[in-house]
Length: 218
Image (tube, rainbow, N blue to C red):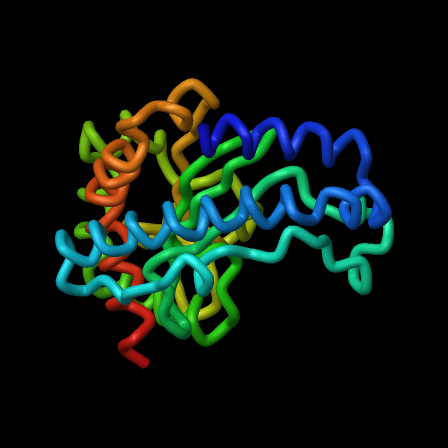
């Protein structure tokens, strides 16, 4: 009943999004959070077994705070409407992100809006062997799972140092290199949900490994 209870808690929190309500239901919050941390620990062990490049990440390391950062976003609600967690965490690399919420749920991976040095490294890799990334992105099973790169703002012209007629210009113009696969509540509450995520992780692996290799070559 863990994910059923998680969705129920998030719905009620969303209707009562203030600290006093959370304080009254803090024990319930910790019960839901502890379930998710344990569940993430199990998934972490399974992912480590199938990928030698995987960086072990405990549930406590993976799970994000449920509080919104009101210092930078004062108009947001006090609490989020989802539980977010990033597995396979390693400094300066893209993680495997799981987002379970009442308004949307999805799995994502790659690198969203990387800093200049990281973005320059990705573009250098594309310039060197962009056909490898193109092949990954156009693989049928990959397209069936993710569609393509996540929609995000692109440069209107070629990046500095590249020609407009570059064979991989459409990739080079991207500011983000991330993919996403949507989930629904029916999938999440099933007993085989971890197996579904493992399947998505496998499909995403070549894409993430390409990017992680690119940004480690400075």
